[in-house]
Length: 437
Image 1: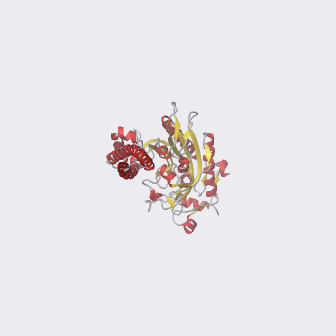
Image 2: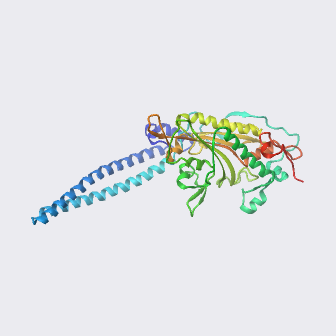
């Protein structure tokens, strides 16, 4: 979540960020009101708690004097009245303290719920608007020109014996599939290619859980306004992750990191699950939009002042990967309304898909500044020795499905065969995929 101190000091900046995202900026005033009420209740609670301690000591003292007087056979009428008054005051105060404690809890929950509705503060320069309002930063490669009628990736995949949607639907329902033969080899090659590059770029590989606790899922920012997009195992209150970003974000939760030697950079390849809620009728043919896939992800913990440079690093690596696939692609600066809650800025790399006549997202990298780390309690030691909130960034290297779409369509030949780019040939074992008999 964002820093409440920043919101108190810069409410107009938060309002502007909300408007850029297409969100309601009146929530800023709701948060300020809730924050004021919460702090007022906490202040009164703490004052009465201090007073309650004094009253409790007085009750103890009076009861001690009463016991002594009784033992000595003295007249205790006045002391009994004093003791009754002290106990009555203590009981009244205890009831009020309990009320204020409950009020503070309620107001705190209201405040927290409102804070979780606010997305990260959009970085200056990010275009305002929704999905269609991105800025194109650069284009790479030459779009293929065919002297034959090109096939789409599913027709090619079936011709190669690489994709089986029919059996996927039979076994699991719509948006499921089988990759077989050259399709499975190609998927494994893509992940191996990414892992090799990640090692060369100095990332530490991890094998991560695919099931995470609610706190981890919420901390990464994936169930605030997108709960309908994730799979929940209700009996265990565990979530299936739609990206290893979630498990990577939780890896250092509640820790204080030593970042004096530079950022912590990790990578993981995992199976990912997405409900694709709201995508009815979109990309129903083939394997572009599916419920299950494998993905290699990069994740970085760094000091906030290093986040922008690390974001550039992630984009450079993604471009390196796509250059190796030899497919035309463009880099876009994603508009504020399409960022997702945790991201302050996001760059997408989109590959050209010939039969669709458009670019489609293959990789994405987000600068989440301190948004996720604040929720998850990830800190680092500043130069003065005090712990401060770290910054986090993530970047998709590749999935095992969408790149296959781009590879098959861009590298297809008239006979239905598909050329394998040189970067993948060591992993695939051939320079061309041929149709089955």
